[in-house]
Image 1 (tube, rainbow, N blue to C red):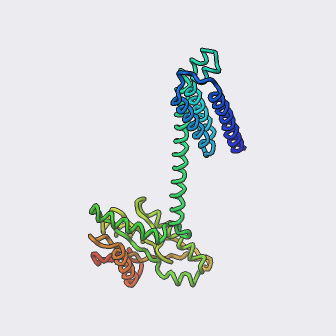
Image 2: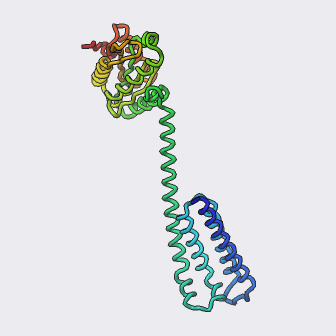
Image 3: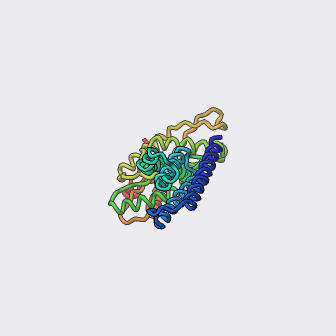
Length: 314
């Protein structure tokens, strides 16, 4: 209903302005020419009429709000009347009215135009901000793994490249850890796909609770996770990985086919820290190799190749 009222207001006011401008034009053309009123003046008035009408037509066709339109319409109309003050002298014999038109017509018009443009700019900024937030939300949804609620592997690759570029440019250090659920395929075969999905979702939530706000947690594979650790040296990354490993190893699981028994699952974690001039793919490969070594060494371990040290479960 409000939208229909806005459309009616715009069309009606524009129609009134067109009729009014036509009457003024006809009067100007049919009235005796004042010796002081030159051809240049007439052309100037005609151009003023054209541009004012053009702008009113533009805002009438726009999606501007009623607040914006009313201020601009009043402003352009007053400006139009003030600009044609000498023509109105031929019609109006009331000097007080003429004085008001001459003194305040154009200034008041510019005042209302300024208010209208201010609100228009404000509404455009708000609309652009909403569009930006919607775009960010859409991009985020496209980068989120629906099952785990973490970022997906495509986002991991993108962010890892950015982190490598930043580390090279500013000589910063960062690390990455890859987390693999031990014997995940056997868990799927024993308890089914639905329970394996619940396992992934619960482990993902656990990982988010045990990392820092600046860390970037992603789902890397079927039963794998990855966490980018900005501004993190090797030893700090190892300690954080060990904290995650311990937390996941004591998380109680009760799948339907366990007959009421509590199940515990462990993870193997590979950690790699960025080396100077290293590419993202090479860093990721080192983390994967470390993760495989942790699994081959008995599982439920944290390993990094930089020092060939293994953190065993306590």
